[in-house]
Image (cartoon, helix red, strand yellow):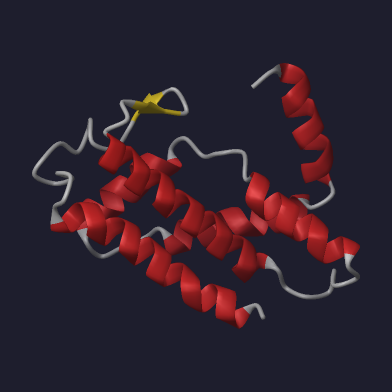
Length: 140
């Protein structure tokens, strides 16, 4: 991403900074797990967070439609969890070597932990998506 692109994103994100900060706290809670392998993988993924474009767009849309008083954090969290789960699954299935300039999860967590077609491979993405769905429902 070019520096000018980052400046443009920052301009829009400044309008919903409070929501994005709340989202980060909610993400930490949502990505916690009592299962050590899942907890480690989620920490690894969140060590290189994305730009949060999807929740930014959602929060801006909520405000522009006059729903600024509605708590959009659960919906933003759901969008980000689903996005993260699909990236994780895509990296494993397609065996990508890097994401955001960092080795993908199957490098530090090699087979059998994340073997393509393994229960862990499908389970981690499914767990994150399943955890996001009630958040969508609660924000409607």
